[in-house]
Image (tube, rainbow, N blue to C red; front, side, top):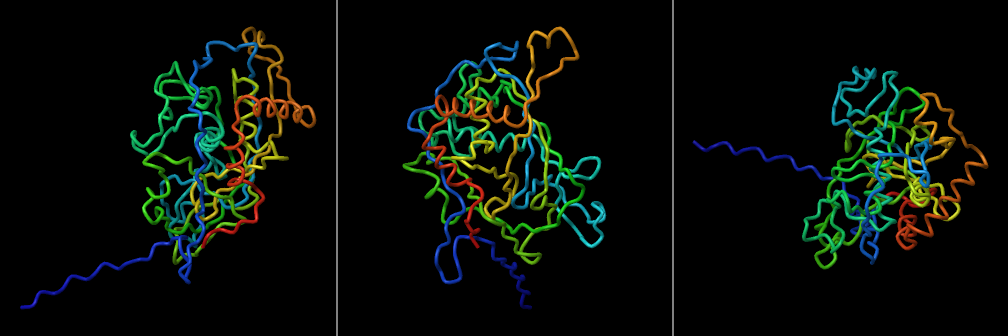
Length: 348
């Protein structure tokens, strides 16, 4: 008796932006930001045992505006009825608040800001998939909490709490948009040909901003909850014991040096297809009027800056950052990638 042949597994063609139907190669949706020639400068962090009078402490109030659809997955797939959408069978979810409004975890946004901060300063290669022998000399992740690079002093490192904290960002409207993300795959050919130079990490990877995101439709994608264009989120950035240059560098990364470096941030999944673009507006700065009062009373009236006074403080901080911390070449490279608005079309 002739054995019945096993059915062959159906081969699905992965979505890939690397080639067009005519055989031409599409431009890569990302760029590697070069590493500064000078190695990261390590120093002893300031600590949090007290508020130092020669440092800066306060809270930045942020408004994040979606420019291309944003999705930060919970990793959970739910039935449409669970998210009050009877017409949807299954959907990959985002985190939502008690009122049903979408939420961006503060830790997720902090990671986005940290990546850009690392790229434009003398900082280590933190949380990379590269093996230890592939890390350029002097760029290994900070492990000694008494000797930290520029970024680790501000954002934190192993066994060391950073000087800043982002609160969760909540959408100002209730509801969401159902969209699709194509199945994404690693770069072809082998990533080693592009990510490494002479066996060492060639730079930090950032995806270009685009004027829109690709949406292939239900036949080629995964149904997900999204924050659609013009959705607005609010968050707060609490900081303490920062130098004026460190504060200024944060403001540059948040896109507040608009005249020369109009940066927008890429948040969440789908970056290769143009998703995740968010612009940031600093609406208010809260500062303590007297540091001594923080230790003497539970009810201290802070000083709030808006409008022109706020702009003056931000520009002074940004100017100091350019003088002391920010590397001009890397900042220009990063701006070329994250510049928004942009005329760049997504790779299809």
